[in-house]
Length: 497
Image (cartoon, rainbow, N blue to C red):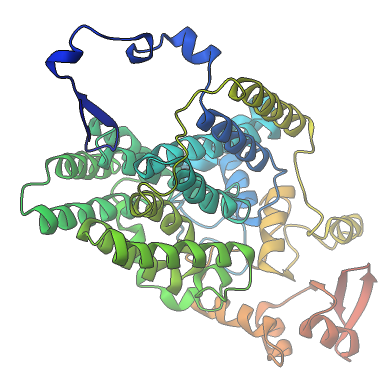
């Protein structure tokens, strides 16, 4: 009997005359019931990864960007229309605004109104578990259990800092679906609705067609043949992207990424748009993933279909921290292919010990899910809840007041009070604010910024700021400002009469 490998790495057997008709029970495909009663080793690993996905997805809500997305969803449901101008700030009120993540905002707000904030956490949990399952599937080209655990473990290790409650999480999920379609494991026609959703939920949608273009070019360079699977996926993805213009905002959404590129100055000084400093755990895990991928691709998998995405998405990530999430997903199948055959442990084996282990890990995943749902919905400790309440009680934080605060505090104020009660100085929508406002805000963050000039231009009625910062210390000793409230972290200052 000659044993070989299929293209997907699974063993095949050519049965000779002497073997004809000599099938054994081991050769027969097990029934679904038998599969369930005799789980594989890799099933235990997958259940453990699912538990991690549930834990991350059900984490309390607190991301500052998410807070504005939810606030915007509330406005859309109340007004039955998507805002076209800024409703939140006094520094750019009425300025043109493209709500490119309107779809995510509506999803958040609908869940909040139907089942509460826990509904949003459940959506995040579905996305995180879905990402785990898709990444595990993409790691299948590694064949051995050791290779798959290494590949999936690396990307899931980054999830605690990357898989947060933002529309970007939807984009990561859609990107993984595109990769599965590019491997020929999903009917590419599904990419039409996937790309429509992606266009109307997050501005990262060009990554979908972008990775497919790299796959097409790489496959052609490798084989000098028409890359049928990749071309089909690319065609349907492009169609879905164009269909994405059939929405409330029209073709404007397709041009949004180009608008961002033309407004790069606005993103200077924004941490997630800067190159990684390789200090956080997420960045270090990605450095390991990228380094391993580069070394192994050059050593074991010198194919253009692997090299091109590694180079392009690797460069995108090392030049902007924001792109680490997409790069980590794209590198997953490439690293898995480069580790093909590593180790001798067969994850498809079904030893008797696997059943109690799988049951235990599955119970653990259920417990993680139940405890997560029962846990707190929000984690708002980083925000000045007490100081803001103090200001509201004294009539200092209203729609006519011009309170200067941090950008992330602006996001929280929009979520907590809404534009009918409070106007903010700035939030993290840097693509919307005029450059003079962004430059002034940057001055407020500087060690020796022109604080008084900026506050004069803002016509600030008060400042709500963290105390242990250059501006906070300046307000404490300034003769033109009086600190009227302090707590452990925050202060409130008003101009001296």
